[in-house]
Structure formats: structure tokens, C-alpha cells
Image 1 (tube, rainbow, N blue to C red):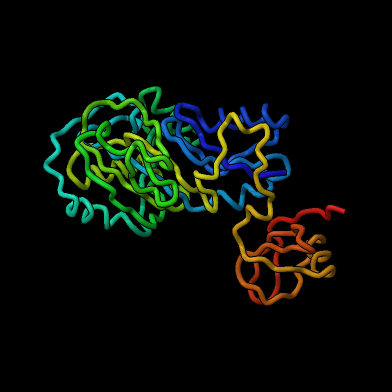
Image 2 (image 1 turned 180 degrees about the vertical axis):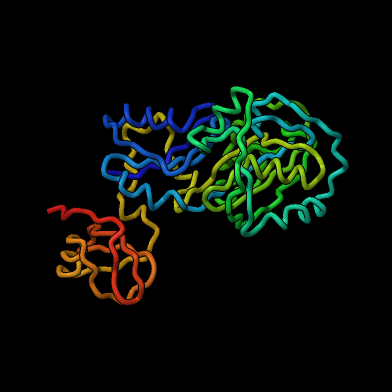
Length: 315
């Protein structure tokens, strides 16, 4: 059964898309590999039926985004859901100065998640406590930001580009034939806005990044818009619409797993399916195949293989 990259529309939750996929594909067994907020759009990777077995191996995929960071206004949700609960005048923004501020955010670091998030503390969801007027003490988490590229500084999110080259995700003229134009949330005002292209590791909150970039510039900030352009090997330019889910072909499990491949013989495949630890010199996580069919995902220590997940013999 397939793994399908879907272009999540604005205002739908990730669970809304999963429910639509269940109806479209006629199955309850649909999972996704990483939540997108309702005000974010872009790549949401769905795993259908037996492909739900690969979700655990894709949840840690790196992700790319286009982020519109609006400065001078903060919100409880850290995005354009609002309302604005803090304002401050924004000093003139020199692009080189902004790049200097962004540079320390690249690399391993600690990040405090948003209060409006699904993180649990003591059995309570942070967003549920926030909606009731409270706040949880959310510990900082280890994340990695691989790259932050400033694409421009604009007087407001309304003035910032929304049409991009789908191969480079750089702005192009709104009328460009091959350009991809995005719909952003309704703006909360005319606030100076940074357009940033980001590549991040698993667990990174772009809403928290917007808050922290604003703090580094000395002003409150929120995420005025967010588009996820890549998850692992899935690009937004290859994603299907929610309406096209019923007939979407997707790709098989083996193609979805971004690990080196060990081509097994019958003996190795049999021992792995029996849960044994056969001798093998491979190191790190690998996919094992037999005659092109998926056998297992394994971890190697240079001496033997340990099964992480096994697939039954299709014959």
C-alpha cells in the first residue's frame, strides 16, 4: 500500500486530512509522519494500510519551509491565529543585520515549544491548558536547524512574495507561468516581515523560531505564514491535492525508506524474519531486501544485524 505526499490546505488540521484520506481510500489505517498546524500549508506525508509500518522511520525526516516572520506583534499562539497581545515599534531592518541575527540559530540548540502545542506535561496537553487561560512549564528541547536563508525584508506580510519557483523555492513574479502561488492566513496587521527559507530537523517549531528571532531583534514576533516544501525525500511539487487522494498512486514502502540497502540471500532474509541476529559487517540503519521485496529495517554494529521492523514474506 502506498505512501502519499499531500498538499495540506489552509485551515485544515492534519487530522482532518487523515480523516479525508480514510474516506477516500476506504480504510481506517492511515497515519501521518509529522503534524502541520491549521494555518500552515504544504507537504503532509500519509501512510496507508500496511505502509503505516514505515511511519516510525519517517517521523525524524528533515523538513524544509518557507516562513513569513512578522515583527512588532506577538500572539499567544505565535502565529496569525491571534489575537495580538504584544506590540513594539520595529527599528529599520538592514538585511545584513538580519542575517547576522539569524546565523546563531543554525546548528544544534535548545528550543522552548509553543504553549499552543500538543506536548504533554503531567498528562495535560499544553494547548488545552493554554485555551483555558493557563500555561505549562515546557522544558526546552534539543533541535537542529540546518539552514536559514533570508529571502527578503518587507514592509508587511501583504507586501511579501507569495509566488515561488517550485525547484528552488525562490520568489518569482506573480504572473510566472511555472510559479507556485500560496495562500497565507489573513494578516493581523501591517507588520514588517522577514521571508525565510528554513531547513530543520525533527521536532523544530517554526512558530518558536519566529518568537525567538523577534526576541533577538528586540521585538515581539509571530509567524505570519508557513509553507512546508519538503519532508524527507518528498517535495511539495510532487504532492497531490486532498481532492486527488482517491486515485493517488503514491510510492511503495521500500521507495519511502531513505536508508542504504542490503540485498539479502534466502538465508539472511529467513534469519531476519525469525528475529535472529545474523552476522554482517554493515554499520548503522539499513533496509534489507530480497529480490527487490522489503524484508526488514535493521541496525548494524559492524558484526551483526538487529531487526528493528520486519515484513512478512509476500509469497
